[in-house]
Image 1: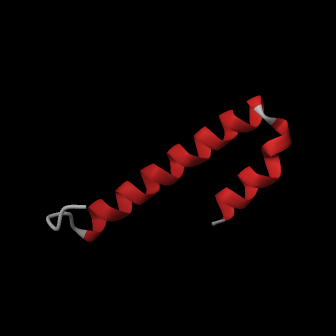
Image 2: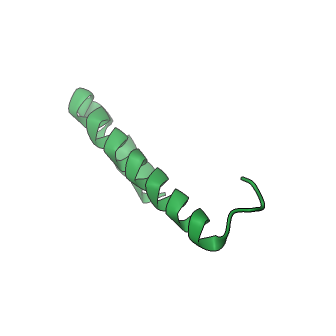
Length: 45
């Protein structure tokens, strides 16, 4: 992270990363049903 980023920019980045992680996890669930529990734990962290 560059020090030039302000709090708003950091918050936006965090929200974007969370959204990407959630989407990736949903796609992963569709392909690997047996990994549902592990994926749920990941989303809760």
